[in-house]
Figure 1 (cartoon, rainbow, N blue to C red):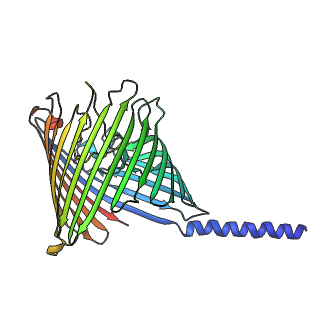
Figure 2: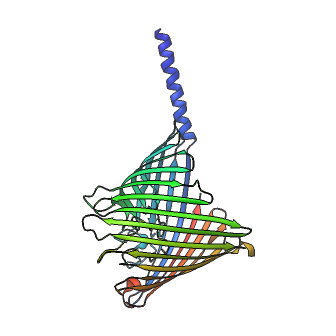
Length: 387
């Protein structure tokens, strides 16, 4: 009996060891090397620029009975190429190079359920990566989702910290809504059971700031070689602790694409009580009129309009190269701000695993033409090698 028990334990140990070895053998490494250049020329001030070399290296283990682990290191390094007055958008608050363990989480999947906990990327309307500089926003969170019901995905999450350019802290994780707060509860349902339509309903309970209810719907269709898409959105933000974050937002957008050309337009309208405004949340925000710089975040009774065009040069033999131009107007009701923004974006893939983007943004305010934050030109160039 003892020999049988010993053999069983040894066999189980060998099977366990084989399973663990298989987990690592089936692991995957991916990464990106990113080179970046930025130049900002504000009204009435000296221009600033910066170079950086950075990117990320990520390891994802194989599955062990549905359990996986992910670790990702992110970095942005000046390499001694910048003067003491370099632009700080690529670096930390001290304008210094940094590295960050941006992803470190465990995930488990079984029977339509998925649970992840740790440091991770998120892509939701009011909490998203918004990868606009050298690395995306990343979050400390626990996320549970269920997709076992046909055409429906349910999501629940608790988010406590974040790091990134939008957080104002790219090199360390900080409290999501301020020191002493308890983070954000997030609930969502995404339904795609209607023909050509997807509907999303979201709730965010942001401690000490606001309760946010958000709804959007997108309808898309094809007519011969023409692609049409129409979207609507509504958000209600109800302030907590007299935060000043309060109001309703309505939005519409439409686009038509044919033979490489895409034309689009969008509109947002916010209604707020005196002295209050809406926010993007934690990232770039969900609003249809959001541009490279401007959104309706912080504008009382905001109105915003956007028109855009994009052309894919594949029809002319330049596979993967596109040119986009967008123009937007952002106004408030107290005549403090009327900002016009024009964005020009050239992007594409120039070789296998190598892509680039050049983004030029020009802002001008018709009411306040002297404030540098509303009157500047910015050029951003990024080249990525993905492996």
